[in-house]
Length: 70
Image (cartoon, helix red, strand yellow):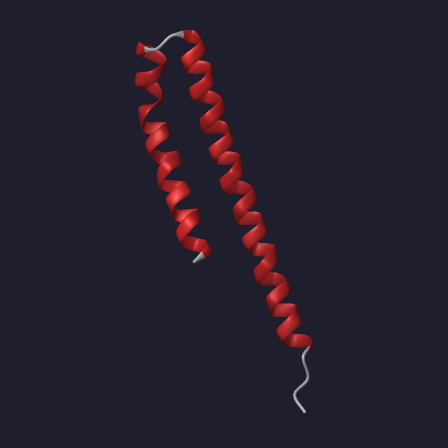
C-alpha cells in the first residue's frame, strides 16, 4: 500500500515536470515561482518517502532476523 502512494506522487511529479515549460512561458513570474516551489517540494517529498520506505524495510528485516523461534 505504501508503494501505491509513492507511485502516485511520482506520476504527479512527472506530469508537473512535463507542464513546467508551458507554465514558464505563459504564466506570470509569481505563478512560475509558485509552480517551481511546488515541483521542488513534490520531488523532495518523494525523496523523503523513498528514504523512509528503505529505513522501514531495513528495520523489518533486522527485526525478523533477531526473533528466535522457540
